[in-house]
Each structure stands twice: as structure tokens, then as C-alpha cells.
Length: 481
Image (cartoon, rainbow, N blue to C red; front, side):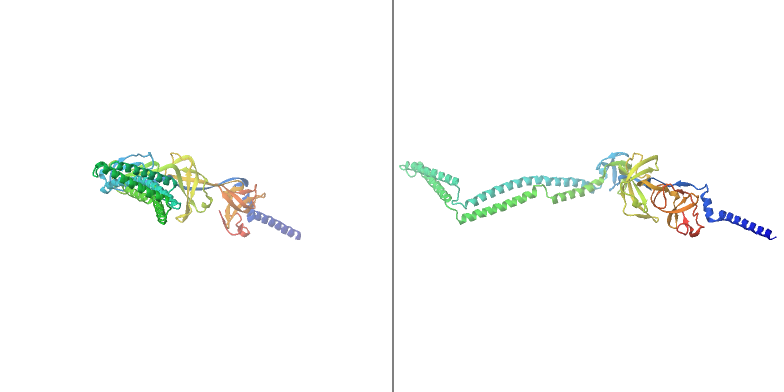
């Protein structure tokens, strides 16, 4: 009996052990993880090294390099329209004109005043030419006067009042005058037998007196030249020199004022008058503010218009841009010159290339979301792309090679940490904490963590395969995707 009872107890223990083992392997958390890991529903990927192109996507609107909507500034009737939609125009081309008969009197007067203002400016230049010529002449005369005055001042320091040449000439003139007196005396002597009232005697006497007077004057001049300068001579020469210097300085000042044409202040005033009157006169027509293409036209001959009424739109289509709105979390990854691929809703099946040309420095909040403006220039735009079209842009922010990469679907966030689940040789899931760097559409760069090339990661793990284990998974606490 005792043996039977013992056998029964042993059987119960064996059955209990077997049942416990079955229960453990079937229902314990570790066993569940192992069974789940071998579940064929899991998808896996091999960790590898390779190239990674990180991009940022954004949407925006295409625009031209320059755009202007032209409106009328005065009331009137349209007299002429010089353009059509699609026509290319040059800066300052007249695009449309109001009928002069419909213009207000003030505008007609402005057109007349414009001609007067332009003539006034031209007169400034014409008068300046005359003034410059006269100033050049006056400057030359003043310079000659100064040279003469300086020569005179130098002479008064010499032993005689004149140079040797001047004295010799004065001597010659005097000797000739003395000979003339002698000849006149002979002529007079020959008439001495005539009556005192005889014309021949009177003429001879008059000629003798004139010869004597001239000889006396030349004698005084010769004596003056031979004499040494006195204090009065020196004072007069010095005074004349100072006056000549002052006159030259004044002539030089006047010449400097007019040599380069009208005064800058006079030109500025004349130009201001022209600008003011021209702005008023131009109200009668619409001019192209820059080179461009007419993209919208809402004016016809005979239309009655009023101030602020839209007339036409002009766009500079030589370059097209897309203005994007980029999230604040991405803006610091974007830099000038980065390449971009653009698509347009209105141009199906075609992509365009571009590059970042401008990045806003201040964000704008819309609906609680902060975005920064980023401008991309199209480098291969064609006629299919038009201002105002909606665009999608993918900006390449980095291109890496030989980096450790995993599918982005394999990365989970657990207690604030990035985690991937590695499938080990026992077909169990092992959580590995990692840090990520650049991200592409489907792959991310692993920068830190106990993960190596060749590891197998699960790309569709459960929300938290270790929730029932002590600590609740990596770092403890709850987890989520």
C-alpha cells in the first residue's frame, strides 16, 4: 500500500512539473516574446552601411522675379492701348494712354510745365558753357597782369628804374628827338626874313615848339629810367603786385565754380522740378516699371477709368521662384544653395530643379504652427510654369555616405528614448537604445547605440513587447510609436 501511495505521489509531482513547464512556456512574458519574435507576421531588415540623402518637404507658390499691378491715377477716357497679353515690353515703354481731351486742366498744364522745366535745365548747361569761356579768358588776363606786376616789382630793386634794353631805347628816342629839334630850328631860321604873320613862319615855329616839347618829355623819361627807384616807386610796385594777386585769386575762384558746369545745387533743384512735374504729367499714361511680359490686361480703348482702377499686370519672367513655408523644426537644416526638386499640381508628370536662394530670419505663426519663409529659384523653368501655381518642393539638406542606416519604421520612442528591436539568434526581441542623425524618406542614420552592421531589426514590432516584464521595457514606463 505504501508503495502504491508513493508511486501516486511521484506521478502527481511529475504531472505537476510537466504542467508547470507547459504553463510557463505558454503563458509567461518571456515565452510570449520568444514566440512573438518567431511569428512570421513580423517583418525584419538588416542593419547596413550605405548612402543617405536627407530631404525636407514643403509646399508653396510660384512667382516671377518682379511683379507689378498697374492702376490709373487720374480719371479719363482711354485713348490708346499699346500692348496685348503675352507681349514683352521694355522699361519705360508706354503701355496705355488716356485721351488728352478727357484730361483735367491741371494735367495739361503739367505737360507744358515739364517742357519748361527741361528747357530750364538745358539753359543751365548752356549758360555754364558761356560762363566757363569767359572765366578762362578772365583768368588768363589776371595771370598776365600778375606776371607784369611781378616783373615791375622785381625791377624796383635794381639800380635803375628800367632794364638796359628799355634805357637804350629811351636814349635812341631822345637822340632822335634832339635831331628833330635841330631840323625844326633850321626850318624856322629859314623863315626869319618873312613877316611874323606869314603862314610858313607860323608853321615852322609851331613844329619847332612841338619838337622841343617832345625832346624834353623823352629827356625826362630817360632820366627817370636811369635814376634809382625811390620809396614811392617801391610802394606803388608792391601795391600793384598785391592787387594783381587778389585779382588772379578771384578769377581762379570764379573759374573753379564754373569749370565743371552748373552748380550741383542748381542741377538738383532743376531735376527736382522736372521729377515733380514729370510725375504729374505721367499720370496720363501707364509706363512699364521694368522689362517684362504683360500677363493680365483689363483695359480697352474708350474705357472710362477712375483713380485706383486696375489696368494691367506685368511680370518679369526671366526667373521664377517658389516661396515655401518650412516648419521651425526643419529650418536650421536648410542653407543657401541647397538643391531642390519641385513639382506643380498643374504640370503633371514633370519635375523641375531649383536651389535655395533666400531663407527668412523671422518665423510667422499661423494656427499655432511656426513656419519660416524659404525661397527656391527654378533653374530649368519653362513656359508651363506660371506665377501663382501651387508647388511642392523636396530640398536635399545633406548627402551622407558609408553611414549606419535602419528603416525609419523600425524606430520607436520608449520613455523619451529612440529604440529599435533586434532579433537575436534565439529569435527573441532585444531592445536597443539609439540616437539618430539625418533622416530620409524611409531610412534614418544611427549615430550612437549598441547597434552594428548585420544586426536584424524588426520593422513592425508590437507597441511594447516587454510591457509585462519587470521595468516595463527599456528605461521603464510606457512606450509608443
